Image 1 (cartoon, rainbow, N blue to C red):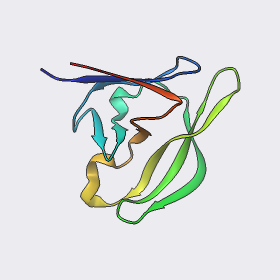
Image 2: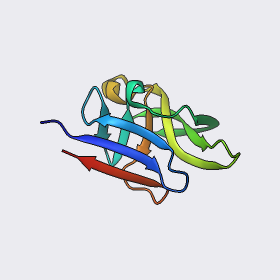
Image 3: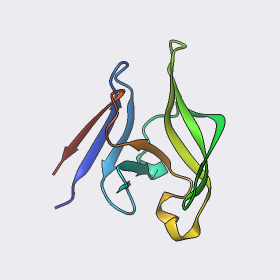
Length: 109
């Protein structure tokens, strides 16, 4: 029996991602969810081009959630665009924290 997760922006109700938890779905790693493109449910996550560096996972850019009404949730997620090859399961996947006041996370069995 597989577990599923649904990640929603609290203020707007915008569904960010929904799918199975696991390597080929929505991968939990270090307190974050790395989302396979197939399970990304929004096209509103846009890079703000503010770079970041993790010593062992390498380079990423922050992602903003830009909503239809013109508001945005800044730096709600990130994307490793130059990842460490040892962490292939996070490469080029949008990611969000598992616990964020801006997000609602519902895990089901």
